[in-house]
Image (cartoon, rainbow, N blue to C red; front, side, top):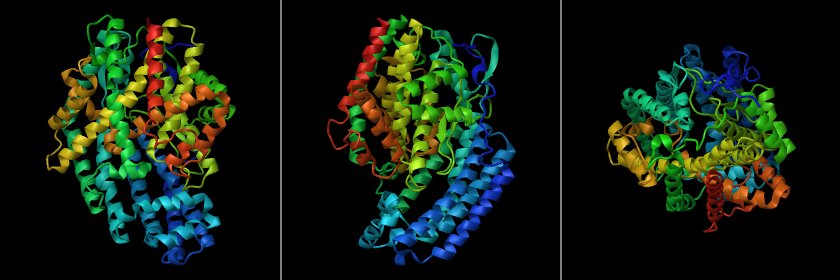
Length: 599
């Protein structure tokens, strides 16, 4: 196995995606959108005012036509989105993104009547039509759309709201990305001073040297300070706008309601889950107290939270690919082949650089296209797990897009995060089992437990932070940087207690998190997914190969049924009061394994 320098990130140098299967150039993307617009105009001319009189065959034809429009538009929009994310400083990319965003709004407005006419049908008529055999594959899509009936406005009002989105929402999100992705500050990680992005500085939280970790976070917080006021204004503007739209759509004053509907989750299930997580905060605190002893300090600092309990070796990108190939092949040959396609087809962009969007994601692109992955690979073992996570999304998208229609392949956020998290577990156990270096193995086991804490516990902290922020704005108080920092500190203190010290600079920890800006309450989906994945992983450990077909069937099902029904079929009953008990037991097993290896 190869190794690379800890700070040069040579392992991912030149690893960029090939977007030509989507569009050969910005002009091609614009031409595709012009074609989509023509299809939309023809669709409107053919179907406007006819939904109430449709039979099953006519409805099936309309769904097929609108699916074609969505596929063409999604390909072009994804192309523009991905170009911008790899270089937000490019004027050409920003211009293309703005043009495409506006064009997609216009295209969707032309076909918006179809959904509105469907929602306007009487319940009994809609139920009979959805039961027609010609639309059986889209039955759940059609029925689930009607959950938005109480929150849907007239067509002119919906058109106005859609037209304003690029300025009222998209512009603020672009400003946030430009603010954070263009941060590049000098830092010496041990090989001389070099420019570092936010993601590169954050990568040092896994560095074995404590002063380096502390200095990297200190440098990050100093770099964030001048951006905080603008970041707070961006967030304040978005939250205020979202609250206004919620009132217009009659969401009843609950800023989480829209997210619950999108995820098709019962609010009571979500809040019960969050309460269960908070009751288990002590699991993490006990680990932090123990880890302090392992690191030889009286009390952990924030910079120590993810510190390796020893020095793990570095992992280059090609070695990461090899690890993933063997891990996925051991689970399923089909999973291996799908994941290997991302590398072979150059559908991964992994080299970090200034101007590139931070974090990682897998985008489905379109039902008739292949998904792509973006990440910032920094030669850490943890990056292997990030890549496994995104390829788990890619597996889900690939299977669902092959088995479902454009309308039934994409799930809500909560269910979408299950296969990505499960993939992490599969890769992690395989890597640990085949790692010959004892220190690296010890580090990995600690990272697995801490990664679960970061998802289950920290994402709950983020959800509670959002709840407080929205409540404050709803009461008429502007979300200033100081107020957001106060909320941030309060919620983090509930989690860490006396087990970890937070430096003053961490008050700005909210300011670089894109999920707050992009999708509100996105973070609880991670909590839900992690707990479901823990429960499923426990079943796989118990059942072995007999579990695999049912699991892949869950992924291929896409959104063809509700999350509750799909999960019940693989043994996770959300209506069971003890549904999370097995997940926390599995998490405790992981913590115990880390403690045993470290002792």
